[in-house]
Length: 130
Length: 298
Image (cartoon, rainbow over all chains, first blue to last red; front, side):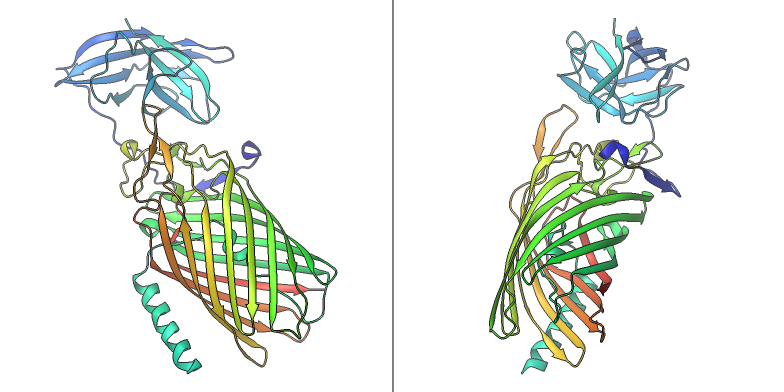
């Protein structure tokens, strides 16, 4: 029922937050190329940077993924995600993007970056971080 | 004496309008009082709208239509569909709300001093409470439905001009897919409500009816007890209690009705809270609500 009912919006202001900066002092620690799940198209690379003692995730300018209703960026121990950290709603379906990573996760465990639709629990893409 | 009580009530209501923050109706408030025409007419159509000022000064307009079908002297079935328009600092959004289907039983003994009323039914959500603006998740205060299937039940007693009602609203299926996180939002003031789960409410209301010619005034006190802490899933996928979300809301409510000769009537309701919960993540909070309804009977 919920998916059948449309909602309208106008005069948008939105709750979008300013994405973090990744500057020249950032050190690239890990990266992985996104792979799609069935029926999804994806391109681009996820990169983990260490900057001023904090990790950040960047999606490069070649990033593009199919449209989805509730896409979010996850760091996860596995895919589909069971043990994960949500980094935020996908900022755009294509182009360069940046996300803060809270705490200091162990990337030997959190070794996947995911594009995941939370509302329908559907994995769109995954990148193994190496 | 009656006038003193009534004007004291009006004074308190005016103060609540000025200072209040928290009328929280999950839907059952409007279903706990049955209208009862002097002559039983089978069909009643209702068109109405409620304007409210919500959390963070979000303006909310909720238009609705309702159809009441009466079966004999005692039974009725009330069907209602709602929608809501929101306008505030986060943006503007419109969405379908809920469908209600509530069966009611009333004692129809106008000559007696006591009259019981009972009702029971369900609320069906028309959205999963995950409407977005610019693809960004928005708080529950901007969602047109709670995203829950709820059971609603009530019992009411009229004693002369006094009326008392108790009611419950219990979510039994949660389809809430809200995905708002405070930490990912540039607008502070709303708590995280990712995959929000809401606890039941219990309502107690007491009122007194003044009647003069075709005018009716019903000042009443509306108490809503939110029986537990609501929860959400944090960024690690762990369900987390929202501290301060349980507790009591007390509202002052004044209902004015103008009846016409053909039994149609016009109703205005104004309500504002005097006691509120500390945290109100469901977005139902209203500092003030003003509702108008027209009832067309045939």
